[in-house]
Image 1 (cartoon, rainbow, N blue to C red):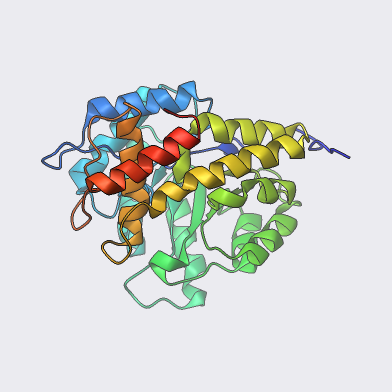
Image 2: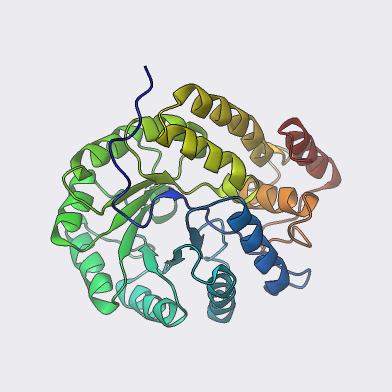
Length: 314
């Protein structure tokens, strides 16, 4: 029997919140015209928020000036229609605080930060890290759990404790730890206003069934309407429709494997695949990526095109 959620979400950071890719020109500058078109494409697709300067947005590759351009362009194009979450992803606390203050001035609605990285960090230092960030700006703070990049896993107990203090307003979970995420969802049910967002693009239906508040899908850049249909089906308790949409998106996700094995990083496959798909769809002008990533070859681009065709997007 289908079961719809009991009530409307209590957090403003729920639903489909794509991590916006950063279109670049051939010479590596931020392509602001393409970025504005991309934001329009996402808003027309019905998304509920935008995450600027995340991993899919190449934030680790961008200079501070480029990051500023991205954030100002995204907030300007969104024009208050949906919340804009800004990544303040830096290796140490003071640098995150600096980025968060810049993002606040640029009009962001929330800050997203990881655990410290490069520096060796003990679990006892995570609380002070997030507390200092939260105290530096008058914006909600979401934790970004991405141990594959920062080499620290945010334990559910740590996140829930900081949420109970009022330090964290939510989490974007890209840990791949589905058991831990389920524990986080269970524990957050007593924390009104906390948003548990999954970054696990191909099992969103299962995550929503388990109580996730939304999804932050890189693939949502390519097919925002598909993820919105999936989310809306889950909200009304139509799990058969949600599964069917998720199955289609899971097949589309094969575009991240278009690169020839052993010739490029997984980051090139993912970000490059999303950008190649967006260029093929006419949303952005070029699929250029930041070095040392490389562009897709003609055969790889053809594989991406096939995925789009099979998904009904070309």
